[in-house]
Length: 637
Ligand SMILES: [Zn+2]
Image 1 (cartoon, rainbow, N blue to C red):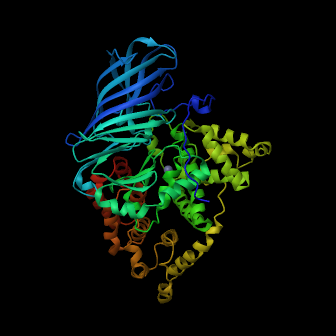
Image 2: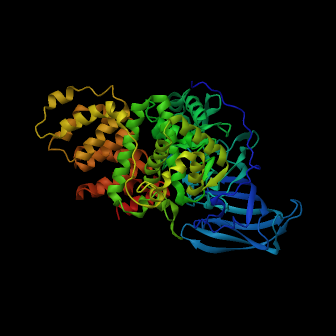
Image 3: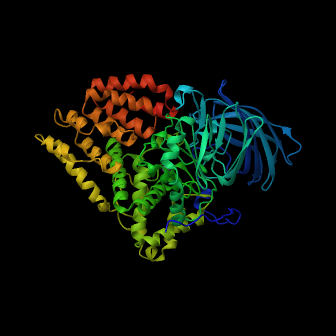
């Protein structure tokens, strides 16, 4: 049954006394002293200024020293963030100004070094108050009115993952440790602030908003958005937030369904601990499909396709409530623990909601993405290991690719396959979440727990089977040694494959092809069909033009997954009449997973498509997210 109601759940972190591999793990992407001090809680008291493009105020941090003899504290910051004054206190009443300096770290951050007059010892408690101003760092995205959906008011949002929040507030910017936080955010009149917090309150008087996150989270999950925002209730614990012009569409597309997704998640993975689950539909330049900021998922407005066909993105973000947000990868090298488990959970939920055939079809498009990625990079590329070795100085964001998602999905599917019965593995997932909730783990922690959970499998040495041993899964690059059986998707894939096959024949009977009515197909079926056309492209002369006439409703569709495929097909076939479609698509949104493949396809084409790439980039680069802009620059360099 899907009608199970949420249970009241009180978080308890104090009984977690067992030690994990992750407790000793090194994180080369932080220069903070997170092994010497523990942050119990921090409060951000901030003011947002759109004219100056600054977020400024005071961060107060409650710290505990956890190693003797600490005379300095290091926090991650960024050159775009300036620190004005630091004071500290033992009792939160008497504050002393203290010295600080800034040290170089890497090209994605610097180190704020706070000097104490005398060393702190284990169990000493202190409060630190940092007056600072954040400007236009990589984690703080300022949008001009033209870059928003409404085009009337500016907008600012933060994006913490992976290591960007150090440009938003001084922090231990590692996923290895967690703390609670609260915030007071003052915004100009007529603006609304929202954050990844379990409590939200507006002070009527002066456009000030209060937030509390009652559960410990890693720094990367702290998120803020300020703009002309409205909301509508769409479920007992869910609101959709968006600019006014998208509110109706958001309500229509996701009203009533989100609660169902949450309930299935709870049934499978245990209680939803975060209280609210709200969704913020972002301006079109948002670089991701979604970002799982707790209590408030940020998603691309591309999801407003008008047909609920892209709901799997929302399901994905909801699944992060257990995998990623509750149990978190301790370092970015083990990102597959966040994304591989979430892909598995997403498809597990979709199986409950939409059945086996649909889920296998969607998984097949994921597999195709992994194939494309490995073909682009070469299978032996070090990024094609599940566990990525992040070298000192390398920005973890630069290791982002499909492997942790789709190869991670294959590995978790393999673990399920070993467990045999689905209900056995479902029970494991629930207990995995319960065991590690509010903590961060390494692959060793997860896999050791798995083997303990299934003593019969440990007995059989499943972790040492040649070629399928866990060590190879983690550390050997290339195609996954096990891929789950997706044959249940055949009933939906076969017709799409056959139709694509007909289109590539040199003398096809176009009249009869066009009589095949694909309008009743599910969106992913059409996506799969277009992927097959793309694989077989370039098509014989004249076929693309005919295809365009035959399926005009696909080309004119508002669905971004379809638009993406059509843009790729146009590029690969050098279909000049379609260039305007590419221009429109790249101008209307800035999602990384849509933008980069199109630029890649253009750049792999002719002089004409290269010129088109440069033309579109020069017209749109300003509206792209910082990271996406840099990735495109690398492609068309
Ligand atoms: Zn994800």
